[in-house]
Amino acid sequence: MLKVGIIGAGIQGVCNALFLQKKGYQVILFDRDEPGNAASYGNAGHFSPYASVPLNRPDIVSDVPSMLMSSRGPLALKWNYVPKMIPWFSKFLLNCTNHKMMHTAKNMHQILDQSLLAYDELFEEIDLEGLVENNGILYVWNEKNLKK
Ligand SMILES: Cc1cc2nc3c(=O)[nH]c(=O)nc-3n(C[C@H](O)[C@H](O)[C@H](O)COP(=O)(O)OP(=O)(O)OC[C@H]3O[C@@H](n4cnc5c(N)ncnc54)[C@H](O)[C@@H]3O)c2cc1C
Image (tube, rainbow, N blue to C red):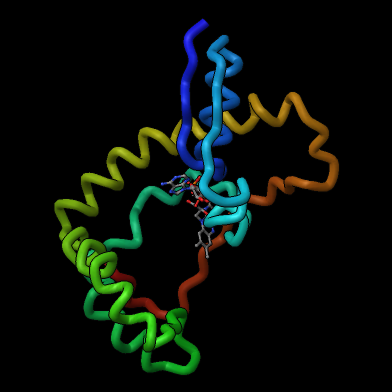
């Protein structure tokens, strides 16, 4: 039997492991910390097949300063963390071009388009009672001048 090692036991690693197991592979998940305690623990809990446009967008670069300065803005920063985040933030900025955004969106769309069906396949095997609600999503803007 073929063996597969997966590094990272968040939602991505666990789902890949499950699907590979279903295909008959022997899978080992590796994680340097407790499984499921990173991004997969602290998120909004939406199943979001529509979210193909990445956060790295050209317009975000000019929006960041005002987001940080506003007390009601969506961004907050621990200023003593800034030196540590420079390498990550530099890469983030380099990926905020229109070309990179469109590249990511196109490929994300192809993956996300399959995601609800894939979740359904997993959900059929467990008792979901009270865990998942299928309510759709509604976006509301209070400005007419929407960004393209
Ligand atoms: C505030 C917030 C809200 C969000 N809301 C949503 C939402 O509503 N809907 C949605 O679909 N997505 C949402 N997301 C995104 C979603 O949470 C992530 O895309 C998803 O959890 C990523 O899963 P992952 O398995 O790739 O990463 P993670 O859950 O971060 O797992 C990665 C794992 O890899 C391990 N690891 C990393 N490096 C190594 C190494 N070198 N060796 C061993 N182990 C390693 C880590 O310890 C970790 O356990 C949100 C994210 C945030 C931050």
